[in-house]
Image (cartoon, rainbow, N blue to C red; front, side, top):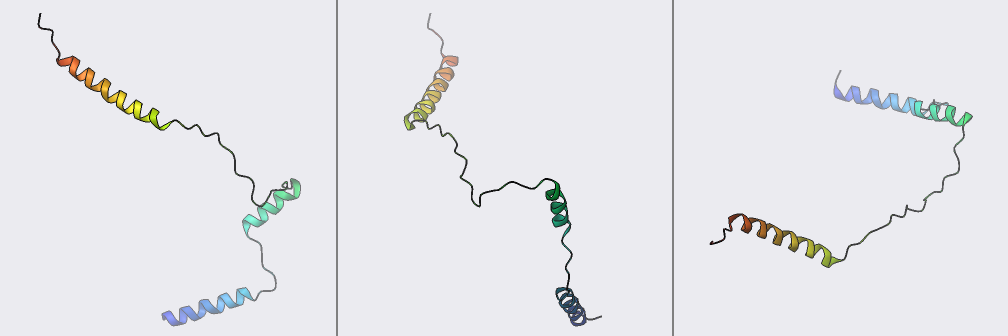
Length: 87
């Protein structure tokens, strides 16, 4: 069977399926319908308000102090390891 014949057959099948009088719902739609029959969902807003998160902002200078303090501590620790008193 050539590609053209295969394409025409698929097109025919699609046209035939689209023209059906009754379409069966998908498995997900059937599952939700059965679930909602016994326990219907509550109302849901179209676009709910975004959840507010508490933002904790640190001052910019605090980050600089932490970085410079860490570098100073590292320099002191490295220098202290090689330091020997003269007496």
